[in-house]
Amino acid sequence: MKKSPTASSLALLRAAGWFAVDVTGYQHPSVWAAICRKLGRPEAAAFPPKRDLLGIFDILAFRPNATLAVQATSAANMAARRKKMLAAPGLPVVLAAGWLVELHGWHHDGRLRQQHWNRTSGQPDPVVSIERPTLRRRAASAD
Image (tube, rainbow, N blue to C red; front, top):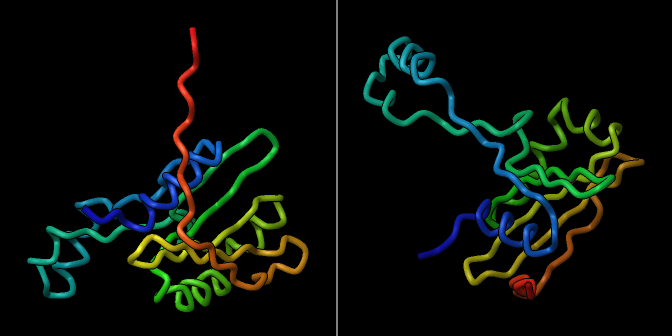
């Protein structure tokens, strides 16, 4: 079974030693049902949309003295997500707070394209392509 971009990024970050959590949530069902009724689409109430943290982040990852916010998507959708991130009012705030920001774009064959945000300028650095990142399992501790 193919993993979602968010699941792939979570696995990558955890393998690299980050404490990573999925921070997406769903619109409250009663609120979404009211919106659907108002739009004349009551059948859509069964499928509430996902909501990203600050409208742009899927994952928060932590290490001592570091916080990383990640938007995970397909490689084909990176340009649209980059545009969305640059337009979001929360991006300059998290960069000013010292957070690291990355955009992960996953190919169907497991290759990753990664983009980092420059905390000084607030603009994205050039995209980096990574050929099939290796996810090493942590060695079991010998007791």
